[in-house]
Image (cartoon, rainbow, N blue to C red; front, side, top):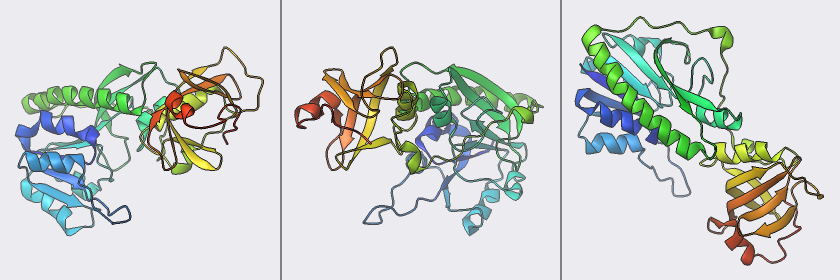
Length: 307
């Protein structure tokens, strides 16, 4: 079977490696210059494709001339994993069997670009992987496979993404083998009335509102650990929080956002309900470090107000 693989993030790589022997080309989203030096960083999928000596097609959109070259590889199947661009109908019609998408949620829940972050932010106990036969609508294709995955108590976006990425790769091999032997399965139509959406994450979503409960703030820390990172301000300087846990069994007699205590476990911060214990942080222009270590070098931190 001839497969064209679409992907643009680290989440995609295990799936690419799992089916590499059937992949005839890799399509990835073209990197944009960033930073003061306008440097272009290769994404993980591009690096993997080059290391595997696979033909690589980089596009900024499907209006690019390079996108038309996909048809030259005469694919039987598309496998689309964390690609980052909507695939138009003309491109979906190219493979002789079907285009297949791997989505990290239990569709029709969390359609859209940020399903893992929203599952964590919502405090869900379970998420999963869904395989769909793609159509021109976002994440609305018929389901051809799905697997539930528990969200562990200490999971953040990094750990959950790695686990779902590995699960997707394992499922993919079976799906590809089944299609090769029996053709494309009929699939199950999604219940569109039960659909929920996972909008794109914005930087401002990381801003902590300390009047929220500690459990809600902790979920924000976990969901946004890679980007934009949950943040607040200390003495007018940006303070990013990378790790925390919530204790809603006690209520501090202090204004929300107040550092009420410092222990080796971290900084205890009053919230609208309970305490958030900040374990790892980074102050503007400083290195990322354990909160207790940070406290030893920051004078009069106790009773400071984070806002």
